[in-house]
Image (cartoon, one colour):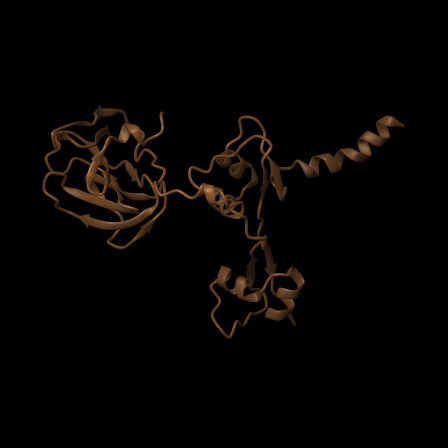
Length: 256
């Protein structure tokens, strides 16, 4: 009898803990947001936004995360925007934005519509507000030359070993304020403004893949590595500035 009860309850246990379908997840020891997102099949940025997480998106054991899931609706004969919105409890304006539909918001039979998840806006404690961005390594290569600065002279950043054509990533989210092919010493150079006086620079690129005014996210590609300017080998020059004063990147970047 006990065995039959366990077997009957087993499907419920599996469904509740299925990463592909769960809408809530309690963080366990050793888990990261990236790992949870991969198993759930939902972008980490979407989960972070739904739960009010700020960079670097750390999670703690026992924390309950909302996993916002999207549905897909195939428009049938007789469907209208209003009827679809009422069926899923989502304002059709939200559905229109998710699917790039312009006013007057018409739908047609057979059209596949993404139904975005609607969740309560997370409460973000005021103490989480930061004036300093979180920085990440723009490339995974080894450090060739570190920060060496004295009396406003010397090496103001780090040089990182690369292969020509490697992807160079934005160290933190911000706006591209400089993207030039010939900056002199650094050749092709990109500068990103992160607000509150913080900027990062990426030099010796073989190619720039962003343009002035672009808004980029942490980890987004901003160029390809190379050997531009005065570099004698393929390398990435990276530095961090606060109010135009160089800051030792080793004090701001996470340990590898």
